[in-house]
Image (cartoon, rainbow over all chains, first blue to last red; front, side, top):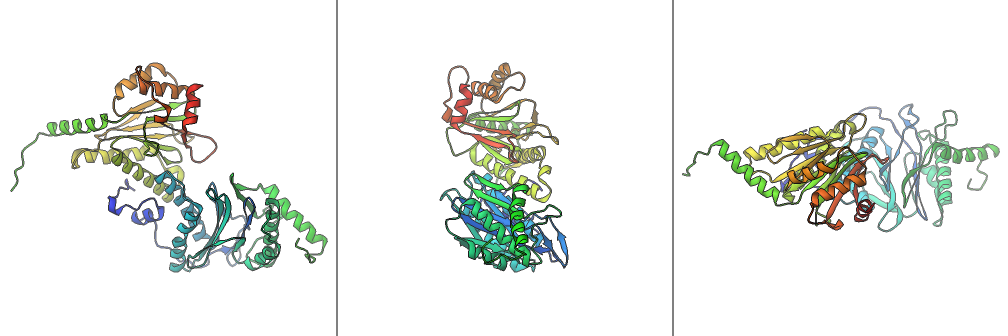
Length: 263
Length: 226
């Protein structure tokens, strides 16, 4: 690639997607046969930020991978998660990370969280309406201007919706959502939000064949992420493991039954 | 019908060089130097928002002197080139030398074929790692590119500033010492530059992928007073 110079009226501005189109970097989305897809990812708001929990399994006709990272830091204060086609999803995360950083370098100012959420809409729309490899992202982060954690979810056509409580994406959503609906309170603190998120993911992993629960044999556990005023933080494996071990031990003791309480 | 008069190439180049030099000499200078842990870039800039120094990529920074609209367009092209290259290949494939060469080609083309030469000088700085060395590439208005060993001065009175800095800074020192020397060299003996008129940025490994950091007035004051 040569030096990408544009005349003022043709300049793509600080948007990396527009630049990639103008420079011919973004090829047409391809269609393949058996694409691995996946997932349950959960985002829960709590008083000082947001918590995200995501499983690690990619599933085609069989389990394609057991240690996929479906949640990534889009930038220091934003987490992005994907469900649907793994190939398109990973590309989607890359495009989001690059776009936010590109904007920041071009303009010397960071996008607002709402700006980032809106920016992703047409990318989702373009992917989902032009290929059968559907991707649905989930964006959660710390809004530095309003000093609050916020969650944005998307529909298949790229519509962006802010959620005040929690959001789930992926095939395990119904099960995770049931647990969240019963357990969510608006005054959750961080540890309660982590516990609820882990429980909801455990439920999804228990019922949905495309969602990987905790894997005690291989020592692979769902990712647990916090975004608060100090930024994106991923819980170390030991800590994530202990959340799931506690749930598993309780369930083992009660013979696999939740027993009427949310635990 | 218009008439075309013959102009000897020597004369044309001389005229164009004079034109570009005049434009560049009007602005304030920038000094970039390698210190023991990274690269520091110091510009005299009364504007707090129209930057002369900017981040290009994880380990690459840009500095420009001369006409703001001209070097800012090159800055934008550099960010696009770097992000585009990193997206197409990998982040580690983004190399400052390749970017400096593109700048040199474009600036050189504009010098010899453009409607007027660009009145800019560009610096591309790269922080080294296990794959690449720490480098300072300077691109002059006529498209010559030079690989400056320990420090580089762009703009106005470059030779004088260069001599002043070379006299005090021998081997790469600490950030505070190098910044001190840089500000003294830019100011000269008969004046002091207020901290609010300094734009300072560094490339240094501080545990993050992105190594570019702007230093605030408070941070600069603290380093200069230490």
